Every structure is written in C-alpha cells, then in structure tokens.
Image (tube, rainbow, N blue to C red; front, side, top):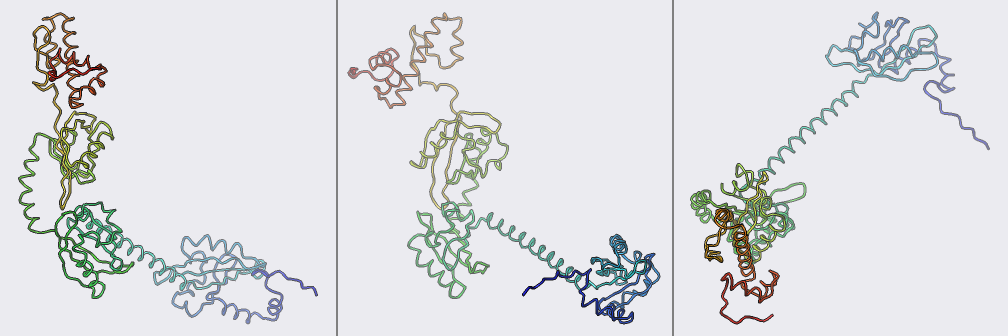
Length: 485
C-alpha cells in the first residue's frame, strides 16, 4: 500500500476542503466570519482611505468610527506609517500579507497596539484589513519591563548596602568574626580581629573558632555556641587568647542568611588596659615624632602602621599617609635579598643592632643608614625599626695612630687634600696606601672577630705577612707567639 504525503498548506494557500466550503458562502456570511475572527476589520479603497470598519466590543472606547473617511496612514503613529504603506502595497488576491504591529493614538493617552494583515480579494478592488487587539500582550510586556527594572533597582540597592556594610566591617576598630553556627568555622574576619589574634585574616578564615582561644577557654566557647544553637541567644563570656595575648570578652549574636545560621562574634579587650594604653599614647607619640632618627612601626607582615617625620624625610615622602599600609621593603635595602636578611634575623633573634643598609627614596635618592629593630609580642604584635643615617666619615679614634714620618693618620679625604703642597705626591700616595692597608686589616679582624687565620685568608695574605703589617701599623695584640704557616 502506497501512502502519498501532501505538502502542508501555507496560510496563503488554504486547504482544498476550506476552499470548497468558501465556495458556498455568500457575502453576508463571509462578512460575519470576518467580523467574528478579527477584533477590528477595515475596508480600504485604492487611495488608502478607510471606507468601512467593523469593531469588536472591547474597542468601543477608541472612537474607531471616527476613522471613516480618513486615510489609514493618518490614523497611526509616526513610526508605524512605513508598515501601513507595506500592508497596502503587498495586498494581493494571491494571499494574505504577513502580520505587522501598528500603533494608533488613543484618547486614553496610551497608544492602541493592533496587529494587522491585509489582502485584496480582487485585482483593483478594495483592500480588506484584519486586526487583532494587542493591548493585553502589550500590558504584559510593559509589566515585564517594569518588573525587570524594579528587580534591577532592588539589586542596585542591595549591592550598595552590601558594599557599605562590608566597608564598615573592614574599617571597624572592634575585632569581629563571622562564624558558621553549625560548624563553628570562621567565615570572615576583619583586620582588627586579625591584629588582635596575631595572624593574617586569610589564616583565620576556615579555622574552628574554638581553636582561636587558649585551651582553658574551650569549654566556655563550646557552651556559648551550644546556647546559640538551642535558644538563639548566648551571654558574654571571658576567654583567654593564646601565646599570652591577654583576655577578651566574647559576645555572640545570631543572624540568618541564605547559607544558614551564622554568629557575629565580638572580641572586646580589657577596657582598663585599653584606657591605660590611650593615656600613654599621646606623649609617646610626641616623643617618637620629634626624634631626629627615623622610627617606623609595622605589623608582623611588615606593613607600616606609623612612621615619624625623620623616616618620611629619608624616604622622600610628604605625609605619613603615603607610607601607611605599604610594606617597609618598598624603601629599605639595596635589593630585596638584603631586606629579607634583616627580617629573617629579626624573626630568629627578636632584635637586630646596627644593620648597615640603605633607604631608597621615592624620587631615586639613596641614603646609607644603620637599622636597629625589635619584635614586640602581645595583644597587638608589631615590629619596631629605628633608622639613622650612617656616619659620613670614619669615626674619630677608630684609626688613631701615626704614619711613618711622625704625621697623624688622615681621617678623611678633605684632610688628605690639605697635605697637598706640604709633602711630595710620592709620600702622600705611600701614606695613603698605608692608611688603606691599615683600614682593611682592621676591618678584616673586626669581621672575623679577631680570627687572624681567617683575616689573612680574607685579605689574601699569609699569616706571617699579616703579622708583619699588624706590627708595622700597631694593630692588635702581638705579644703572643707567632703562628707558623
């Protein structure tokens, strides 16, 4: 059995059965069908003038009978006129045109949207235009747009509120932790809490809140969280921080978010100690600011907390705000490894004295300096650095003595220049060479802590040669026996 598939008819080509039914319809019946199938039907003559109109009951208030005798294009809004021209131009007996949405000015003040299609039953005859009321669809679209705009406004308000609260959370001087009540894991920690606990915020996040306190306070913290989960409320407790950082008052309040229940933990340090620190801070700050040597206080990650005027002058900065929050490495050391050596020594020993390095100014200036540093533990651990310019000439007394000929050893280039004209150039060069040798020997002995074998190796001399020069310049104690090579 063979089945022949017929192509699906298009709107311009009605099915054969429908064509047969249409053949039995007279004009009156066809008009009723058109009126029933369309919300609005217009009869347009060859000049584009509306000659007749059939209007549904829903469009009674739009004064459509007033369109009769007017050109159709004059009843629509400006942007719809090209569409009217296209509907009139494309109307043919062969089929109906595609649907186009056209807007009409309305007495209500809101444009009347109508979706039109047209066809010309006979060549040269009038054009029949069928319209469908689109006000319901337009109202839905308008409500959708308004809803989207309302959602965007709400989202902008929420984002602005979140930004404000997050900024307050970060700049607050009170240590605050956001903790998941179910797991007791820290979700967020502000910088004040990080300073109080003595560790970076990123290392606090994810930790069990109980582990942030001394073991003696474990039971009290666990009881506080149990009360939060059971009743939603918990009283204040006293807890001890680890590593001797003191005691704090811990208060917790419950709030709920999209991720579940969380607790806002506030850590309040001892108010008596805080007041004492505040009373002492003013005179201490004034002394540090007036010091002629540079003084800098940083947090354990070497970010500057405060710096006095002398340091700002060395670093070629105008205000303390330009330094605050930046790492000291930015200005200290000839290269990164030199600064790292200073900080490593400070971590290992807790203090550093007379560390020779340089300060690199913001505008390219370089100043030789000596650094003394100390690491301070406590509730707010910090690092302190005293920075003073290195001596610009050899200190008096370090190389005292007389050169051959009975003259004093010159202590600076200026003093050597003063000898020009008083002694011959040959004598001046010889004495200068003797001075440099003496300085090198003393430096080698100082570096090796008077280990003469190491000093001789450092200078490229034999031990006998080193002893001979030491006798010549009167350096060191040579009363003991001379070692053999």
